Image (cartoon, rainbow, N blue to C red):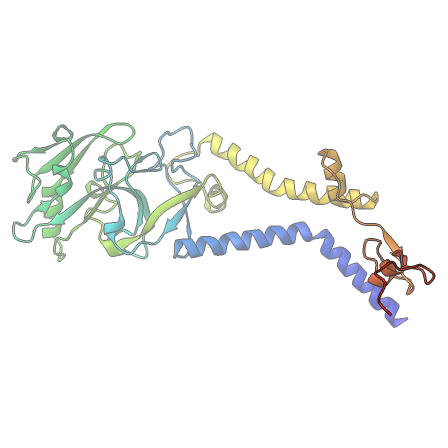
Length: 345
């Protein structure tokens, strides 16, 4: 009686596991993806949700391959700022990420842990000239001279203290004004000593660099950078935005919502349909693999027929013992005459 109840409990448990196998497989896949992302990223969390439209290439439509509101971007840890390719540095060889030249960086303004990290494109690199008190921008000597000018000063990239004007920048070919004198005056009003770093700007920020706004008026130091953006998971960050509240600077593109709903339908619906179909076929006495091969017109696997052994077990006919083969083989009869050479007596 006890053995029967245990057997029934085990059978019920097996049925429950089978009914949940789709869910178990989905959870296992998600965990595998998370572990892989962490190993690749080298940071936690490995994904960053885009909460603003500062990197969008359109205010009304999102695109796969650009950074839009509601996207999730993979963060890749880097050793130092020298690994970052800026917009101006990438013009020569055409290096691009997310639809434009250069790398996109994620950094903490002023290194603060309390401020929301900023994800913007690295525009150029500034090096503080300790002897002259200005900034050097060496990349200006490598790009076409028609792309830049100096207001109120000689056109030289050494020890700059005036306003730099860059033209034809970004997907919308904007003009960027970088007032070095304003940056130097900010430093003079604080106990901070001027330092080298990156100038950053959102693709959709109409040519206003972060250093010319309240975002971060100083160059971005190396230890403020969390990493660079590598790859994206479009639309799925909308789930977080809907839970925490609307995007802070405007509505989300409608095609982003459509893309999210379609993706969720496929991720959730396909495994359920496959699992239910498999259960229905099994109840009808059909093996899912055999049924699928027949529908696809593939050749079925043929197994060797089994025959009864003296012990009652079945074994393939192809596996016959050597003794049986020897027994059926033709032999010389005892009365047969052997022909050979006659020996001398």
